[in-house]
Length: 205
Picture 1 (cartoon, helix red, strand yellow):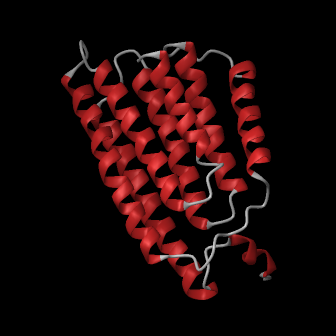
Picture 2: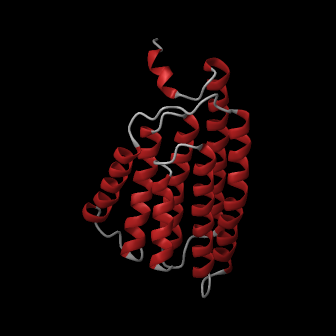
């Protein structure tokens, strides 16, 4: 996989923590997932047929997942933009710090290209950071997807890649997360009239 494509996958994931509009965030996720699928398809040459199927699964996910997210977004429209807990500059600085930590402190895993390994780990950490830093439940869901894309990037960078069974398992897990999280997001909207999870801090046992 080219260094430029790996860098693009990282930048697209990091941008999710900065944008405010959910539609823009979905577009970023779609582009990142598509780039991941293209990268896997490029690596499929000389690998097993199972890996080719895994590449096609990733491309299918890149098409289906954004559609599901758009459905969730339309069912949980916000009356107004949820104010972020921190400014975009602070969130961007935090993402930059996470990426630097991943590059400097995470030792080589010995699974493939060092840049790809660091990018994959950085995406997992960035996804977690998005889930923690963003207040709307929908944006927290997108953070989980960014983290899962990091795991997929690491999986396809392994010499020989993973079989389609593993990739289908990852896709099923992601679909399950989306289903559960979407139901949770809609429940928050029904009860509170908004997806702002900051309001949940006032709840007590």
